[in-house]
Image (cartoon, rainbow, N blue to C red; front, side, top):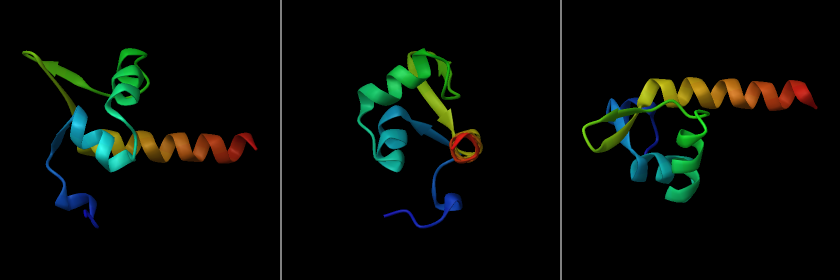
Length: 68
């Protein structure tokens, strides 16, 4: 189990991203397709930058809290 952000690789695969977020791969692919989750396609691989993932999560969490 990952306890620190720095323990993760600089870029995550969709599978790794799903595991970190506790989601299934299909949901992660859908978030990427909708351009809600930052990702880059390199060749045939879709990669999610670790820091961009956490920045996005913090923004989403802050937005959902302020919306209530």
